[in-house]
Image (tube, rainbow, N blue to C red; front, side, top):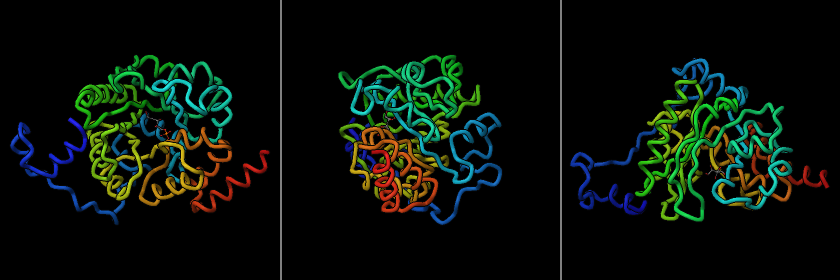
Length: 312
Ligand code: 5RP
């Protein structure tokens, strides 16, 4: 079933067909309590008051205590698309950026082979794998939990292909099992909402996909910025970070990060807009300026330009 079809089913009860009878009156939420922050009285990140010490401790490695936010650097793209631009040599492209990120998100193969073991940045380990851009995406399985533990992962990430008829069930089942493992060993799990070619990129879809991650036990949700993002964030009880998506001009990427933060996002898990930038080091510092220091997009872009010029 394609995502637009799902959207049309949600919007038009007469098309529900074989759906359960009590699904024929799905109403969009309209009371998100946007002016009422979540209770963070016993832990500084939302939705985690009742988690145990180990989850909190690992989350505290990833999310800056002062800003409550994170700049995660995503470089897991190769397991789907091979040596894409900016990721030809993880040792040369990513390792030098590591100390400027709050967390590194990658696969076990790239981290073991190309990130020095004396790296002290927390690892968010990409834990599902299976298919590439050459075949059908997201027919994934999970790697063994022992390996995530042996890599000292501070979080584990897996994709959920919500709305994709072929892979929704398998990815939700994978994710659910990963949360079982994470809960057993106190490792937070990040749900990554997939983007498919048929996807309706709107707040309604990302709100649904993000909420499914949280309902299934995610401690972090990674999704995409869209208009109405404040509702996506409000309806997701745990911290939300945004992917950057395709490479944009630097100012636009900084605007994207800024807008997401303004809507309540807890940071970014950005890849291509950092490592495909003309000046990746300057760019990650500029992104951190937006995420942690409250820089406006133009201020962050000025910082980017200054750092880029200095590096020449
Ligand atoms: C998708 C991912 C990627 O890490 C994600 O797309 C982030 O990278 P980018 O900012 O380049 O979109 O989790 O599997």
